[in-house]
Image (cartoon, rainbow, N blue to C red):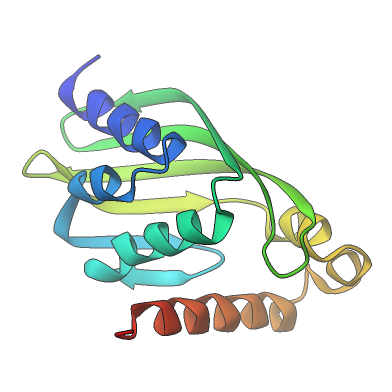
Length: 156
């Protein structure tokens, strides 16, 4: 494994161990993260998102990763998150394709792609099945995700 492949493996191993601090250490301070649930997050928001998701899972999340590939500038991996969605307590198995860009030996851009309709069918049941493919429903998911992150980031 080259150093960037090792970095991706370190990130997902930390994720599997619910170690948000080590996950954060894999990111460049100016990191950009993009996924269907949160949209675009930057810098500290990215680490806070992972911290929030790990805390909300209360240790009930299983992370599996594979197909790590990387060169000097970019990389990719596949990963699966299995957990109970906190709002509905429904079991979700989310299969995700990740792409990375590297700078200064750290992840500067992280893009996660997954099928939102498949995810919403699992997370919301019949409502997700009927509406999960719509832009309206997907925007609502993003609004709720960002609101949760905003609340999590507020000083306690």
